[in-house]
Image (spheres, one colour):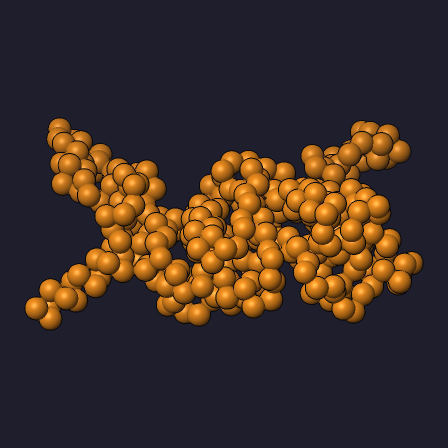
Length: 326
């Protein structure tokens, strides 16, 4: 009975029968294999290799990696879209074109043209778009209008919280369950925001923030996980959130847990910044509202805020700002 109990505990924790995916899933880690994983068909793969040997001399036959069995371990890390990182050094390109041009093309004529396929002011050597320092804009605004800084927010505020920023707020304890991770966020909101609406980004396709997402996750991208409340975390937080399917799964779990506690949740189709701003401006028509966010939401609030409505605030890690006083 003790052994049966242990077996049942493993099955309840891993939840293998709750997933709807048709792909291979590891019972121990929850990793989901991609379409290339064929370990469950190893016998047929081996027979196909043997069949391909028939009629060939030993020296003529070559083992091809693409014909061999691929297991779940081979799909742990994702590759870039093209399968490799393309490095483009504008300085080397400039030097090569300059050497070729000397003696054949006048230097003044040569320098009239772009010496790189992508403008270096917009892209780095790895063909990644450079990021703008939008978060600095709020600090420059406050230098000109210091009176908009507030030290005490009014009571009975409607809070609109940036869910994407919320996900990165806490460190995740190692080997914790996804239920425990969700509970950590729920307790934080209930303790600090009495009337909250959390707006999450959507990860259902391409969006204007795809380049920002690629830049943030770098090369640390975890495998897809069939996350369930009882499943335990088996990778770093950065690797888990670097996979957009994992991030959407966690958001779906958070949605259910938050609604159980009476916390309102809204989902954007892709980037949530505009939806956060519109929700805040809408609530501010009838009740003082505070947006808990960072970055570009500030610029949107400044643009869309109506000074005739109730006070609209922005709460960042460093400041509390009354947008309608700007």
